[in-house]
Image (tube, rainbow, N blue to C red; front, side, top):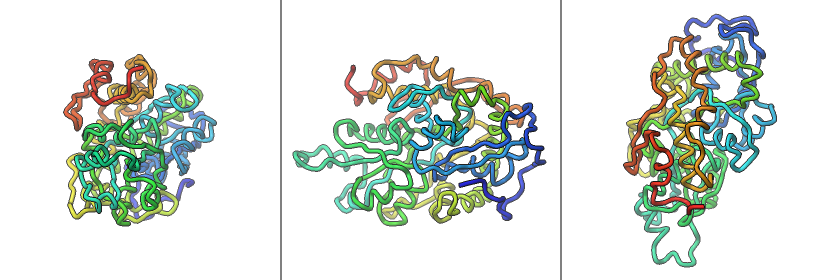
Length: 409
């Protein structure tokens, strides 16, 4: 996808006065056009809407959104410089930073783009077999009849990505060992429903609207949401290589400002979310129907088995800046899960790694320029689905404290 013409049905951004190319409140821009990668997912909205609504031109830069086919493609194009920035899975960026499963490159989290809004879907075939809850799934994968039986297969979208972490955490919270009781595979988001329809996978964790598409196509049902695993969890981030950030710091700030304005605009009203859903549904973006995007974007939808869900923690893009702040504790949590599941064979310098990646000072500068409040602290506390409290006070003890985890090195 390249940058589209503004949709005439969408209101113009508040106070938008296009700046001349290369000019910005943050100083002369090193580049006046940037390619920003994204996947066909509902939460690509901030990048797409920043371009569609002209927030980018307000800051003198042109965002060219580039739809990619897989998260691996996003990573590889970032490392080759074909993409300047990207809407990235939080954990995926840290996988690149640590050189897990691919080339190592120093990375930067510029801001968080959204919270919540991912889903765990099981196949309708499992429902026909009487498996509609986590407890029933546990009994099925661990029961005495399992000797010699096919292992159930579950998909996530990238081995170090958020969906891999939500899936493993949810399985473990149900008493299912994701390393031993089931088989985990990687499937790109747009191919997830087809894989389930073909019987290649029994369930998955993926971003919307693909859980909604599975329900609409009568292929799967929503057994849990990511916000049930971790209420108000971080999801996608605006990421860049540190090499790009050093070469184009003012350009990066201009893009951050445009995307931050888009996050604020999307969350400002129900009408803005409806307009956003219409834009995302287009063939050049997510390529689906508004009916599969909008209900879950609003947090009100059917689960595929006849139950109506209303999310206490629906997908959010701004929340007065609370969403967008790159909390150190958020980044550290992903490192604890890398350690838990054996992706890291020893404990990293949790605070040191995250402090170098999450660009809190730069975010505060941009937020201040836009009048967006930024929290004074660097960490926040959360209670996850298994009752464990995460407050970043002792990440090593937190990672070591799980009963279900990879065997110690």
